[in-house]
Image (cartoon, one colour):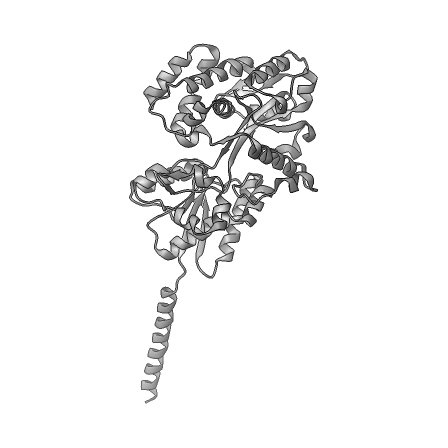
Length: 430
């Protein structure tokens, strides 16, 4: 009898353990995998962005497991992973491609979720994404939104301009004023160079800025043209070649991977730095006095009017084939990243311009804030006050076109290549 009871007891214990295990399996929390490129441990914005992801994970720990995975190959690595997954008929749960345009191939494969219905149904969500709504509209749908805007113009050293007797960029009326100022800066013995350029990013910024100066150029930059044999395109290439690249000596024209264009500016050697508003995060530890560094945006061909690059570009993309639980979790994540509370952290801690329309930049400009935050606020406000705000040309054209253009700057500078030849080669390549 005792033996029989023992057997029954063992069986009951075993069944209870089995039942408990079955229940645990049945209620296992879904896992949401998010890939991003903020891998840098020694860069504050990257650490701050990862902290925001961790905050979201903690808020929803009882509902699902949110795994934010940083790829040490950066944004390019996230884009490459998406391409590889699409080729295999798959897609990650959610990604941040941070400017790399994965939308067309993802849409063609049917793996990108249209966010527009969710945005239209939530006024706070719509306010949080700001210009994403118009700029990331693709065939009437919105497959991506970004939590940071690529807001780009240039910074100038007011002290060097004054020493050269050059009119400062805030008073420029047209691009002719740029040309006149560069000549004055070159003639001043206290200015080593008007700017340092390289064969990539700063030259591309100036190219895009000049392109925004005409209606034709703005239309071109917002489309994917059948050909780049276009007067606005050629005029912008010619301007950069003659009025910028040819104005610096060999020492101040470097390879596309060189950071010399930033170093010279912060060492007080150059008068202008073509880069985004996020550069303000560097102002606390540079040789130049921060009060000398001012934000500026581009003149146009319309007297007194300014143009700024304010680009949403691709950012978060959600897998359209997820079940409802995981899909809703991913949507909540994007809402969290574009909320006013998170937008404030993106601005104050990650030193970037969020798309949210709820940020009051005057509060930062006039308040008791760090010099880096005040500079960022001034730059963001100036961008919003520009007469024209357009995305980067690369947002529409893609990385291949950007790379093709960058490959022509050296030849255009030294005269070994004409604008006509460069355009022909770009068209042939693409």
